[in-house]
Length: 241
Image 1 (cartoon, rainbow, N blue to C red):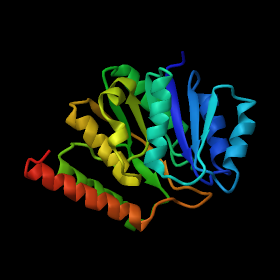
Image 2 (image 1 turned 180 degrees about the vertical axis):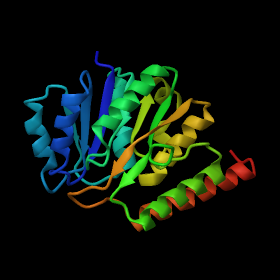
Image 3 (image 1 turned 120 degrees about the horizontal axis):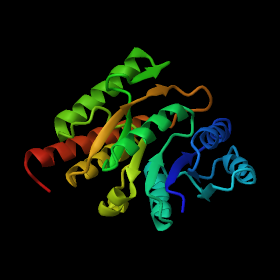
């Protein structure tokens, strides 16, 4: 049994996803990749099926419509746990996450095997972004400061979507009950691991702005995150479970 599953949600990533997959199999041996495609009109799913002829440990789950990032990861987690993988990795399809940083994250997990969650962090020493406006950087830093203040997680980049989860931790927490998407999905998962006393470490990465395609970020996703963080923070303040 292979031990590591890299889950890559896709929606209209025909230009980016095949490049990412080739890089993963070239530089991260002994890993399987699961693409969860939300019925991409640009035929991303067709491109992945073609690559499966070349890479036998590339897997594809196709959904008929766009159902969101959080639900894609929940599906991927369940698929991976059923097949006995020991590590389940979240990675964006748009090349914003570098494979070289994933190697560093995997090495750090090996050096600290009791770690439950490794976060590829933009906002710790050594982490950075490329091609971001100052306004976007301030928004992300400010959001993460707000999360730390409200939830007391002690994590500097709780909105990050570049992660390694231990299967043992995913089995302990009820990830199917986590219904949020986007930023808030990542925050809620971090909160769930923290509540269970899981060991979380952050590893510095370089986050690159996508060059091709359209960002999936929206005002709705930001509003959802702010509302949920405020709600969770108030529950924490008043000790409501």
